Image (cartoon, rainbow, N blue to C red; front, side, top):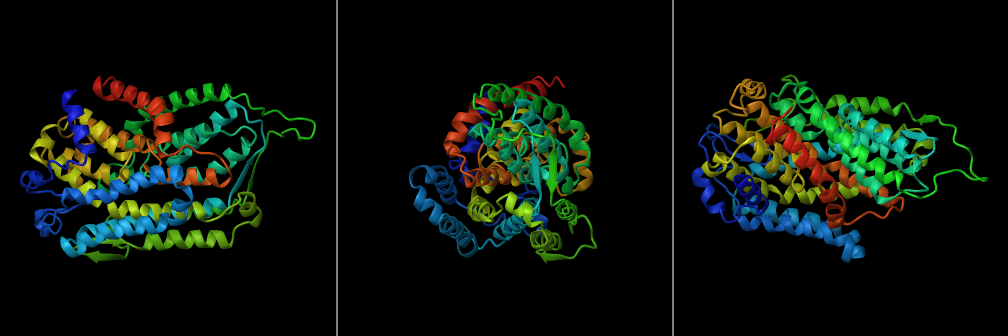
Length: 492
C-alpha cells in the first residue's frame, strides 16, 4: 500500500523533482512520449530532447482556468477560451520545436488531435440529425433503462456516438424535473464506463487493439467489472431519482404519454455506421490504406477525411425536423475543439515526465497491478486517457522484458504469457476507461455532454464542483470496490 501511494502521488505531482534524474535510468530499448514509442533503433528522435519540469506549467494553468473560468470570470472565459487555449498550446509547441528541436512529439500530438477531433466531430454532427423522442413518463425506471441502453450502445458506436445520440432525448424526457445529477450520471455510465467492453467503445482500448490486443479480449476480461460498475451506478441513480420530488406526472393541459419511442432522421444511422467503420482504416494495420510517412511511421488521413466528409454530408442531407427538434448547433463541438487544442498541445511535457518515470528503474520496480490501476486511473482523469493507457502499458511490458512495438509480444502479454501480465493489462484497461469519468476533461464526450446541457439551460457544476459533489462521493467508492474485488484480492 505504501508503494501504491508513493507511485500515484509521484505521477500526480508531475515528477518535477525527479525529472533531471529519470533520463539516465531509462531502459535503452524503449522510450515513450505521448502515445508513440521511439526506440533507440529509430534514431532516438524524442529521447534526445527532454522537456524540463517547468514546461508542465502551461498545462496546469489551462486546467486551473478550465476549472475556475466558468465560476469566477464567466464572461471573459466564454469570450476568450479559444485564444487562451491556443496561446498556451503555442508556448509549449514552440518550446519543443525551437528550443528542444524536438519535432517528433508535436507532430504526434497534432496527429492525435486530428484523429480525436475528426471522430468526435463526425459522430456529433451525424447524431445531431437523429431525433429520438421517448414519449413516456420520466420515471426512475425509464431513466435507468436509457442509461443501461446507452452503456451497451457505447460499445457498438463508441462512448461519443452513444452520448451524442442519447443525451438530447434523455434531457427532453426529464425536461420537467431535470437536475445536474441526471447529466452527471449520464456522463458516468454512457460517456465513460459503458464503453469498456470493446475497442470501439473508448479510444485507449482501440489503441490497445491496434497494438495487438485481441478484439474480444476486452469483452472477456472487462465484462464482470463493467457489469458490477453499471449495476452500482444504476442502483445509486435510481435511489437519487426516486427521491426527486419534481412533478413528472401529466395534468389537464398535458397530453397523456403514448408510451412510444419514435425516431426521426433514421438515414443518419447509415452515416454513423460509415464513421464507426472508418475507424478500422488504420494504415499501420492495413498496408493498402494510404498514409503520410514521417520518420518511418505511418499517419492516417483517409479515415479522418471519411469521418469529416460523412459528418458534412449527414448534416447537409439530414431531416430538418430532426435538426430543429434537437436544437442542433455547433457550439458544443467548437468548445471541445478549442479546449482540446490546448490540452493536446500543453500535456506533452506531463506525459513525457510520466512516461520517463514509469520506465525508469525506480518506476519499473514499483509496477504491480495495483499501482497500474491507480496510476493509470488517476492520470486518466486529468490527462487524455488514450496516451496514458499507452504509457502505462509500455512501462508494464518493459518491466517484464517485452516491447509494445512487437504485436506478438502484446498478444502474449494479453494472454498471460508473462507473470501476471493479463492482470496488468486488465488493470490498465479498466482504469483508463473508468477513471475518464472523474473530471470533465477525462474523456472527450464529457465536455461535449456538459456543453449540450448548458446550451438548454441546465445549471451544471463547476470543474471542482463536479469532482467534489459527484466524483469523490460516488465514483471513488466504486473504484475502490472494483480495485478490492478484481485487483487487490483478485477474487474474479
